[in-house]
Amino acid sequence: MQNTRKLANLARLLLRRTSATAANPTTATSGTEQTTHFGYQTVKESEKELKVHEVFEQVAQSYDLMNDAMSMGIHRVWKDIFIERLGPEHGMRLLDMAGGTGDISFRYLKYLAKQPNTKQRESHVTVSDINQHMLNVGKERARQLGLTAERLPNASIDWQCADAEKLPFKSDSFTAYTIAFGIRNCTHVDKVLSEAYRVLQPGGRFMCLEFSHLNNETLQWLYDQYSFQVIPPMGQLLAGQWHAYQYLVESIRRFPRQEQFKSMIEQAGFAHVTYENLTFGVVSIHSGFKL
Amino acid sequence: MANVRCLQKVIRIQKFVLPLNAQGCWLAATCSSGTAATFHTLHQQQQQELRSKLKPACSLRRSYAKDSDKLEEFRAREEQRERERDAAEQKPGTQSGADGGTAGSGGDQGKQSAEQAAKQAKVDGIRSRILDAAMLHVPQHGWSKQAIVQGAEECGLPSVVHGMFPEGGFALVSHFNGKCNAELVQCLQKQTDNGQKEVSDPLDFLVQAVRQRLEMIEPYKSQWPQAMALIAQPQNASTALAQVLTLVDDICYYSGDRSVDFGWYTRRIGLATIMKMTELYMLQDTSPGHAQTWEFLKNRMDEAVQLQMALAQTEGMTHTFQRSFNSAFITARNILGLGYGRH
Figure 1 (tube, each protein chain N blue to C red):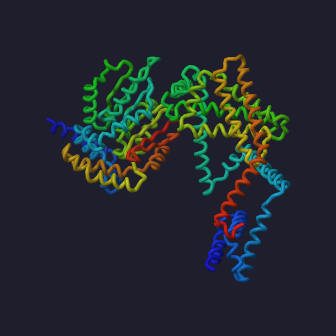
Figure 2 (figure 1 turned 90 degrees about the vertical axis):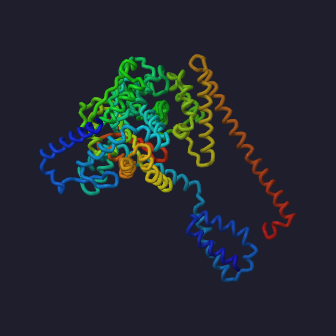
């Protein structure tokens, strides 16, 4: 049953791809197309999206378990700090991109529940992901945690499958945009950043939580050893996926350094761009404002 | 002999490392203490060499010892330069207009940094707009993130911009302090014609300046304890300290203080202490118009002046004490035979 659904999804994706290439015959031939990185491999840009999709299809079910195992539970602290830095207030409209299983959105709603809502404002969060599988896992978790429309008096949550490079939302429709551990999987990071700029209101905030680079050589070496020797075997044992986690670990190393990513965010038009390293630079929170 | 050769090497190294007048002093000190004995055993030629090396250093040392006339000239020159720099800063608009026309490879770099400066100026403008609007909400919400959020919403920006102020309530406090300090300095500049006019009674001037500054806190008096607590936090200590010291320096400068001795430090630190004490007193003062606070301030100032006079009188006495202590030490050393060859 699951296999046929997987086949159907794959077929749908391939159909979309062939129709796109039929419309632009110049990109059909492999010689003229751009290549990009997929972990340490080099692939065509059109293929990367497909391959990333495959990776997340495979890991969706055990995503949260693997997160806990790989980071020894520290990822929860990182995400808590991330939401603290955002400091949500009632009346905020958040777009949680690559939000998949809903970690950031649930923390956002919990934080709001602790704040007094004197002016009775309505808050909203749209959880968006390119992979419907991840969104389904998230919806199930929300139901288990009891975060449904009845239980949340002044907040609403919406689930939307969308491509970060081509968002289906109107311009100036969100006050905050977060993307946690998702931007390194995108093919064109600059397009993601400019789409983020488009959908944010003036004064809106862009925040990105992502694995990044350590400044200390020794710690970087230790981190490399852990990433390449421990994580893929752990993935094989716990989720039955070696190559998916090999890709994840390699993609971390291909992502630009903190300063370079900061200038990419500034290029997209954001002002007052800052970054904060957590755990010596293993993850980094970048923040920018649309002013 | 080896000693002398070492000494010659050291002299050569010192010439490159130390500034000349300090080198002269050091050489004089070493010669007087360490090499007195070995100097006598030197060959005539080497003695001449050493003397020739010492002479220029000593004469340079003498030339750096200024007369008071030269000091006045130096000060006048520096103040003139500062005034020219201020005047140059006054006309950035005309200068950047002229530069905008020239475009070249060098101009590109200049344009980039000009763009960055413009962006930074825009961000700073928005920050001060938000903080100014937030000041109106301080009586209700205190110096906190809530006040900043209210201020932001009044400016038409979403509440999420409070993220531009990660230090929270302290951003408001330092903004308020900065504004008050700037206002006070402007007032003092007008009073003393930009530091040119002679101040008749420096003590009274200081008292009036401190009183004026503390009166600016009055509208926020009930929330001021919270502000003082925020200032006392260690993560905010550096900014707070810099603001206080700049303020105290400005007040002392406009009161006519042009000292170049250690009194420069003692006067400013003393004034900062008195200001903080009076601020604390004011928080619990319920008298009409804070009359008791101003009396407290006057008393502290008088005490400080008395203390300074007492210290100046005993300065002669402390010198005598120092010398007698030194002589006791030298006698003890001679008795024990450790000071052979020294005088």
